[in-house]
Amino acid sequence: MIRTSVAIVLLGCWPAARAADSIVTGHLISNEPMSYVADDCPADSICLRSWWKSVIHVDRTIQGPHLNGRVTAAVMQHTGLNQRFKRRAHFFVLRRIDDPAQRHKLRADFFLEEMSEPRQMFCTAKDPREYGLSPDEIYESTDEDPKRYCYEMPRV
Image (cartoon, rainbow, N blue to C red):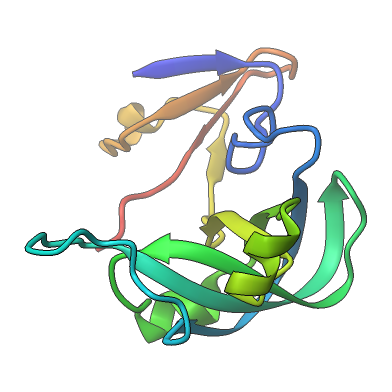
């Protein structure tokens, strides 16, 4: 599938973020279950998500209210993150917790809405299919002369 774009926007989720969200880069210091928060799981039910605390060191604010240094965020997740992802996660979308009672209960100032590891894209003058490559998506730049084809290679 070829997608035409004027510019390739890293991760593509900036427009989806709310105006009050802080979009930041940094690194994940820790991600652990909040043993101090009771699960809101009804009796005789199986609940697959619970509250986890993520501590993030913010290096740079890309958009939204400025943050820097160490921040604590709450996130609902099923299980712990694998070590590889924890080391590689560098992009975070944080939403301030407005309710003081919720901030106190979770012992966090933010909800962690998104986190992502970086991905690498390659850009060539020819369509990668001409080289026998078959990436999932190809972004075709129309604002460059000559045209450029950018794609992420599948992991092996």
